[in-house]
Amino acid sequence: MRILIRYFFRGVRVLLAPVMLISEKLSTPKAVERTPEEQAQVDAACQQLALYQFRTCPFCIKVRKEIARLGLNIELRDAQLDPAHKQALLEGGGKVKVPCLKITDDAGQATWLYESDEINRWLHQRFGA
Image (cartoon, rainbow, N blue to C red; front, side, top):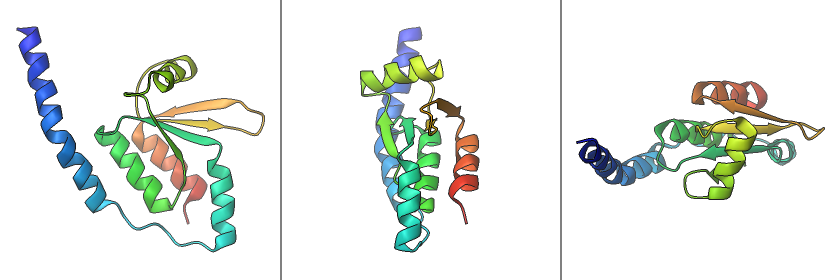
């Protein structure tokens, strides 16, 4: 019985994945406009950030929309399809849970921030108007 339930939910995910991705594309907000100098500073700061995510995770989509709204160039690392990223997430953050924002400071120390609302709050405080 458990196997039937598992396959049922996998089937639902397979059917909903394209709908979620199309919905994300259609509803992604326009990026804030910055001067080229300000955008260069933001891009430099984003070099120290990486978002571990799954493509069709609704919470990851929420974070990616905020990244797009703020006009950030953050590296996206797919922890579902790339075993190296999954392992790095497990070793660095302690658990394979997405979304997770890896924040590396100037000294090279990494902070792992989980939860979409916390990530969006941090991004807004750091890069918002």
